[in-house]
Each structure stands twice: as C-alpha cells, then as structure tokens.
Image (cartoon, rainbow, N blue to C red):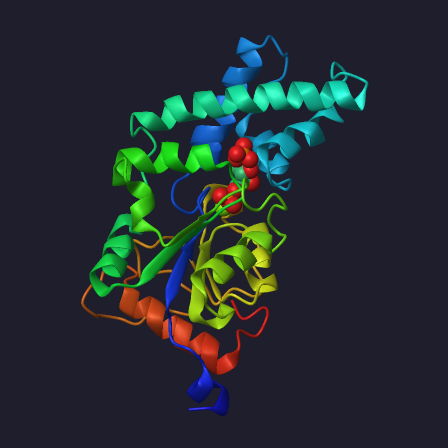
Length: 271
Ligand code: XBP
Ligand code: MG
C-alpha cells in the first residue's frame, strides 16, 4: 500500500447527482414538461429528443432555454423580455414536471434503491448534489422514498443553495462543508461530463452510470464508468466478480473503487 493510501480517508459519504443518475429525467421528464409548457403558453417551440440532447450542453433548465432562444427567430429581442419569458416557461415546466413524476411514472434507475438500502444498512451518509431546482428533487423522490425523503440524506444541495451550476464545483464544495468531510472521503455518482467535471474540480472521486444522453461521451477523470448500478458487466475498470450482490454494484464494490481512488489519486483519463 502506498503512503497516500495509508493516510487517505475511507469512504464516509455517497453524493448522488439527480438528473440522469437517479432517473432518466431529462428525456422522459424535463424535455416533455418543457414542451407542455411551450404549448400551454402558445410558444411555438418544441424540443425533440435530438435537439434536447444538444441543449444539455447547457446546464440549468432556464439557462438552457435562454441559450436556445438565440436560434429562435420568434424569440423576444430585448434581453429583459427573454429573461421574463424564460422565467415564465421554466416555472410552468417545473409544475408540469412535478405532475409527470408525481404518479411515479418515472422510475428510479435500476440499482439505485438497492445501493441506497446498502448505505442505510451500513450507516453510510448520503447526500444529493444537483443543479436542478429543489422542488424537482422532492417531486421525483417522494413517490419512491416517501414524503420524508429528505431524511434519507445528510445533505441536499440544489440550484437554490448553489446557483453556480455544474461544471462549477460550488454544489460539491457546499455539500462537503456541510458534511464536514474532506473531498477524498466522499464519492460522487454522476452521469454527465459536466457533473464529473464539477465533482473532480472539488476533488471528489466520481463514478459514472451512463444515461441515455451521455451514453458514449468520454468522461475523463472518472474513477469508474459503467452502464448501470444494476449490472456488474460493462464497467471500466471491471467490477469484481461475485460478492454478496453478484448482479449489481453494491456498497462493497463502491468501497473497493474508492480505495483505488485513494491509492492512485484518480489519474485523469483513467476510465
Ligand atoms: C441537470 C440539469 C438541470 C435539469 C433541469 O442537473 O442541468 O438543469 O436539466 O432542471 P443534475 P431545472 O444532473 O445536476 O441533476 O429546470 O430545475 O434547471
Ligand atoms: Mg446528471
């Protein structure tokens, strides 16, 4: 064991990204809700799956809309009118998003609840670190974790608390501060290059579960990259065979990868 590993902290918290990581909320939630808001407000724009994928380069739903307005000839000319329209559409989008997810129609990704249960059983703290609005996190998690969903997490940092959105590391810095942990004692689970960049900029080792929109994008700096928490196949570096939960990524496997981060200090481009 290297000197770094001997003095490195063990794993003390898992920090969950929300959109794309907990559920496929972008394609099946936010995108559809945006289109419903456009229609309700008689705004003549619609985002198909491909266009929305392009727009995901811009984090933050309101910011994404303002960005798209640059290519829309019908968009208001004055900056303050664009801001006002973006705020209106965004608020209605969030209402529609809440309706879509309230029924539980948007399932959590396979393996997410099982890993959360591992953490609860072993008393490992969890946090939520997201660039989405706080109201959206509650709307998504209530059907799956119940009205007291927040009690499952030691810290919840959203766009309200950290307005500088990923890839800015502000949300991760805040989470670490509130948990009282050094970055190396946490592990982030993310799906997007912006999320990975945010975690790494804060020094947090990060695992990537690929979502539909970022299925083949390079994610330099990730500790491990794989298709799903519900599969041990397809991970790079490979997940160990066997274990107590041979069919999924369990906390024991996460601890193994995290220990590797401590030993090697996550060389960038390793996965
Ligand atoms: C993803 C985002 C968010 C959502 C939409 O956040 O960039 O902006 O697309 O949510 P993360 P809002 O992956 O960090 O969860 O409309 O509330 O911004
Ligand atoms: Mg995400």
